[in-house]
Image 1 (cartoon, one colour):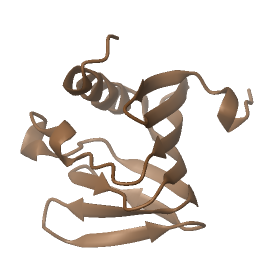
Image 2 (cartoon, rainbow, N blue to C red; image 1 turned 60 degrees about the horizontal axis):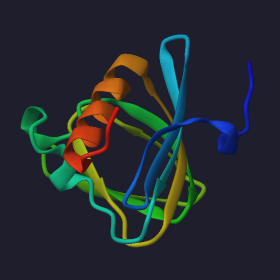
Image 3 (cartoon, rainbow, N blue to C red; image 1 turned 30 degrees about the vertical axis):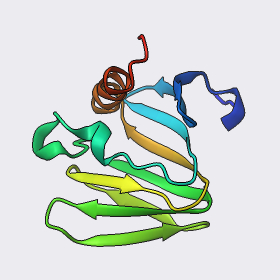
Length: 123
């Protein structure tokens, strides 16, 4: 199987946030777009610890993203860098951002469903 990242179907598209993705085997492959100023923190309220509980592996294609972990540590991942975020994190961006991300499909579905509910987007 193969696809270009722009061919991936939309899983979420609202408020400038766009998550295109497909499940292959046990993984979800997503093309993530966040506009300048996007902050996932308020959208994650209601999840355990009010943080994303899905692990993600990925590569930043454009911009940079700030990550805060459950223990309070923060880091910034920039264009061209690869990353792993364990369960228990939130993210925000100061500039337009795009990435390719790999996540366990069931956990990613829970996160997308939660974000849709918080953003008032029908399933």
